[in-house]
Image 1 (cartoon, rainbow, N blue to C red):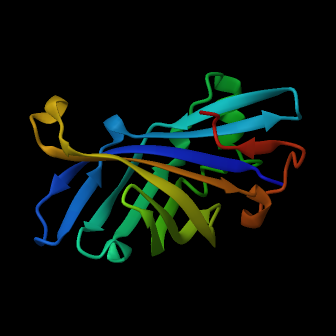
Image 2: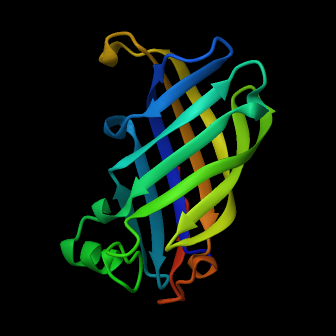
Length: 181
């Protein structure tokens, strides 16, 4: 059963790096990690994790050598309903008291074309690490006028997860998929 799907739109700022590599630090103010859960077939619930950190290192000469490391701070989950946020943070779902972070560290990058890739890596949820693949689109790299003209990069990342792969099988009739575009 598909239980967690994440869409990640990232705006990052370039940090000094080697000439052939560019390091972009995730800017939580311009990053939106969104998930959608279909509740028992009746309605979809959308949630957001507003706090994240990490970096993407782009190897412009050899994109497959690029790297992604990201952390989502799970206690910040927001679904628009305080009681639901409490339940999602609780031991039946994210158990944020014991597992306050979701982590992703890339292990392989497959370039599809100049603006898209498949990024596979170690995804840790509820203390369990499994390989997960994201479909990634490059939105833009260039000067960002809202950040004083500093170079930024924007990406959209999508994946689907089965929560039971990470040791959580509560409410197994819930289905989670990427937010519709």
